[in-house]
Length: 144
Image (cartoon, rainbow, N blue to C red):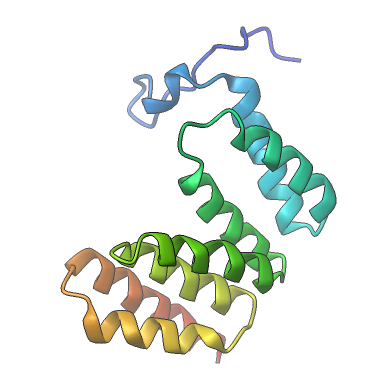
């Protein structure tokens, strides 16, 4: 058990307190447990922990996107699909979420990844999004 108080922050790579400085360490640790549970297919436990953590967040969307990727790594494309498709429907301008959806499908070996990525590459003018999408394509090529 750590001697740090619950409110302790974890320094970022530069050694300064990061943006999560006000978010209690115990919740960040629970986030890690929930994500690892999703990866290692302890889905019921992961869902319980993640649901509790999401209740503490003003905007749980970024965590849900990470959680969707973790589920995909664990082979659960359906959670990723449900979560990210809903996010994309609610935020159609979020091209990064579309790349995350394609990545989630790819990691889960779901063929839907290609169509999502093709759409992003055909319609996006955002350099960073296109670069991320091309990175996913490069990764996909290594799986062949």
